[in-house]
Amino acid sequence: MPAVIAENDLSKWSDETGVRYHFPKQYKAKLSEGMEVLYYKGKLKDKAFSDRRLSSDPHYFGVARVAKIYADADSTEGHLFADIEGFIPFEAAVPIKADGEYFESIPVSLINNYWRRAVREIDQAVFDRIFSEAVLSAPRNVWGGPENSLQTFETRVIGTEGKKVEYYGIRYERNPRLREEAIKIHGLRCNACGFDFEKAYGEHAKGFIHVHHVKPISEYDQDQVVDPRTDMITLCANCHAVVHKKPQQLLSLGELKAILSGRWVFDVN
Image 1: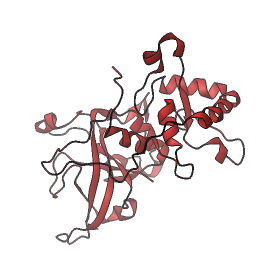
Image 2 (image 1 turned 180 degrees about the horizontal axis):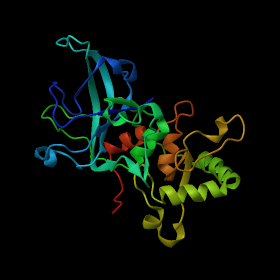
Image 3 (image 1 turned 180 degrees about the vertical axis):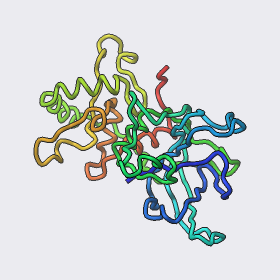
Image 4 (image 1 turned 90 degrees about the horizontal axis):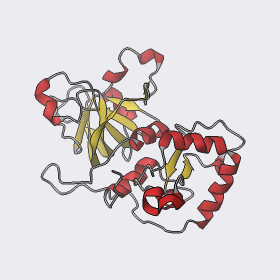
């Protein structure tokens, strides 16, 4: 499962955004090597840090992956470090709410201190929903060292889409209202690369987009309730095909966007 890691504007630890993250031992079981993480900052408390943040309000500001976890040798309390790889900053802050609702689910038992937790586990659907709101900056040499890259992700791109079109044509016939609602929520532009069929092909392609189920219908044991906001996403044909390139290793939206971030995206302005 993915996680959210909270970063303070000022830390007494030797943290470095996108390189190394320090965290207390009580979160040891919540971070693991290879895990996808979203970076989070709380509300601005010291205006001296205003120019170093994307927003003064609580927000998500980047995505990365945990490479290695090891003990802080200088800690007497069992604290740990996580080496971070593939950090990609967002170009704009992603607020913690959309349409008045939090992206993250807050347990009743943690309602008073949830946002102060250094590491917060989230499920893949929540990760993908937050990530779908992000505009990514291309990986770049932020810290003066070797350029970060997402070498742990597969970067092959395919063009075959016939089988996928047939499969999702059948889906639309079974769930036309869910498809329409998903398009209302997620829009007609590809949520991974930004491709707009109408912009590229004109009136002939107006209103056309693929609707992807986070969990394929073929994996359902029986009819299940599907929430278009969290269980579906709109993708272009190419991105949709890449997601399903390996049926036994379905790419998440986060992994797909990470692949694209090191290549190119369509101009969505």
